[in-house]
Image (cartoon, rainbow, N blue to C red; front, side, top):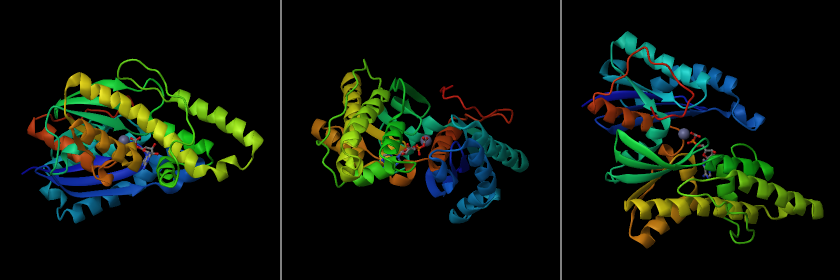
Length: 334
Ligand code: KG4
Ligand code: ZN
């Protein structure tokens, strides 16, 4: 019955989670609001906020799980990718704890953890499964053969889906991060009102930078004729932009399912919290008689529970990490 304490600090959320025998007992997340006024995450401020948050966040996670440090069998942390200053706070904290408690250390890749977040709920996919991971920094289709055998079979060539949401929101004058706001306004809008360019990219890869440019030119043209154009059409603009991002994502995801013949499909990452994407994805699965899995909201955006579940499988596999390991901003899988 291994008890794992996991820490996630790759970007602007400080999170800690405790899991016992693969069951999540707590998942505490401290959001950093300091970045809102700058329209994006300021790395130096993120590191400082992690420094302030990390001890209280770990304390709350242990308390909520009804455990203490003496019960913990291993310490897990996000090693890569992310903001290096942010990663260093979590990794140094985890390494210090492992050294002080004389417990094993487990380094976890953030993107692999997003995929394996789908193993947290009781209703979970069977291997092999596919996962569309859509976050602020990544857009990937991953083939999961086992917890330790994950292969990227498609990815974005430029912007991530989350960036497409956030940059579009910025063009509409919405604050950062704009993804959840586009989701909210889109609920009231007509997704067929405006049509934006669809990129023609081969195989299972994606591109979102052209969409941003086409929205920019469209808004420049319309606001020249009517300065109130965005305000008067905000809901329809949000619905149409969201619709285009969803069709780009699901077209490739459907192709991946047909090419591989895999019928257990998941979504993961911050953008998988998008209600339009969740509904369209589940509808696509129903239509094709595939099994669709969407993680609960708290496991979509950055969280330590996904680090804990990944570490649990690594622990069972004896994949422990030496204390000499260093954090890395790089996105590579190995
Ligand atoms: O996975 P995540 O929390 O952090 C990264 O690892 O990047 O993803 C953050 C991204 C942001 O771009 C944010 O705007 C987007 O997820 N996001 C959403 C929604 N909630 C979060 N995008 C669209 N609709 C949402 N409901
Ligand atoms: Zn993430």
